[in-house]
Amino acid sequence: MQPFNTPVQITLQGGQRCQGRTALSTSERKRNIYHNNGDPLNVHKKLPSSAGEDRAMLLGFAMMGFSVLMFFLFGITILKPFMLSTQREESNCTTMHTHIMDDWMRCAFTCDVACQGQGKYPCLQVVVNLTHSGQKALLHYNEEAVQINSKCFYTPKCHRDRNDLLNSALDIKEFFDHKNGTPFSCFYSPDSQSEDVILIKKYDQTVIFHCLFWPSLTLLGGALIVGMVRLTQYLSLLCERHSTALKR
Image 1 (cartoon, rainbow, N blue to C red):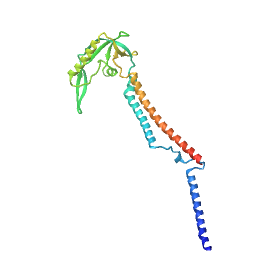
Image 2 (cartoon, rainbow, N blue to C red; image 1 turned 30 degrees about the vertical axis):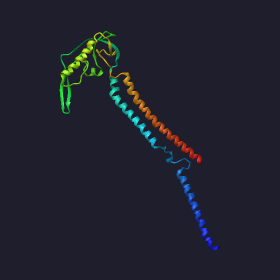
Image 3 (cartoon, rainbow, N blue to C red; image 1 turned 90 degrees about the vertical axis):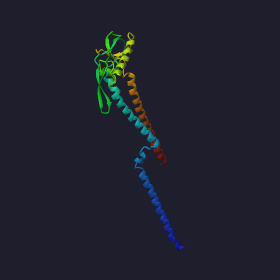
Image 4 (cartoon, rainbow, N blue to C red; image 1 turned 45 degrees about the vertical axis):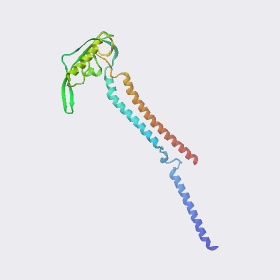
């Protein structure tokens, strides 16, 4: 029985060294995973995310970016002209007389990429009477018509066909001639002594409301999506920490 003592001792010593290495590697893994105070490393602090959550986050940020772009575009094209325009109130007007001026207005048109020409268009004037004050005023189509040419009811698109421009002006003149004595809605400026009134308002309260409401709703929806995804990830991290603490 003497020859078997040495192999048995070697086997036992090898097993003890293997157990020592296993215990050492386990303790090292624990030290790598946890700090001295038992908190997980930053890898566990990172909020977990899935492919669906990443798409939702991308959608939320895209909605917020699109809403900012809409605010910028609407602010330049609609809100700024509305703030700079004269505030007008609604009233009733009656047509007094209409006529086309003898002197036609000059205009410029583009016929091709490298072609520009000069033309003229008839200036239609519509004189109305404000019902609430009895004041005589010159009627314009909208705010832009007043800014472009304060003498004419509207400014048509300039082109070479003078007969077409004249026929359009005559059709509008005939329309107001048939309204002679019949009241219709118009808008005037109570704070201004100007004798200009407009037929329609290009920028009213409804348009301004939609320009502010829809971008704001898109921005709120995008922020809500991003916030809900981040909240879900944070709750998932809390559940993971709680489960780890219970296992310890």
